[in-house]
Image 1 (cartoon, rainbow, N blue to C red):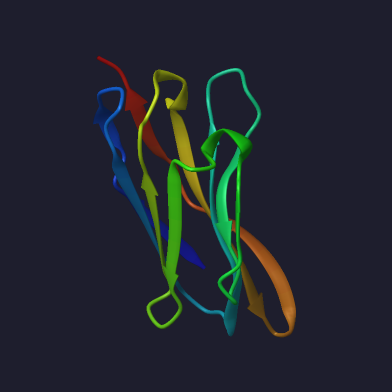
Image 2 (tube, rainbow, N blue to C red):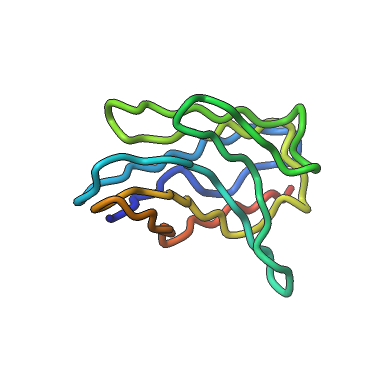
Length: 118
């Protein structure tokens, strides 16, 4: 399974940014799709996740500032981040839990850098 992420970049505080991720390869289905982030010196942490059924969960610092959506037919994932803060600066990783031959596998994208700075 390959994950292609896009949409990172430099934005000013208070602005919005949209990240996208497309999954391709050999799998029978995708369970969870989500975004995580990792800032220098910090552990990787949850931004948002959406299940195959559409249930969502968000990191505490993101509630009210982010929406996540997926297209199950296209195996794509979108993350809309609003009211961005300098402390949101990090590398953002797409994550997918996919099924192959009845087993679940966890996959990570290559990461896309988001920089929030004036």
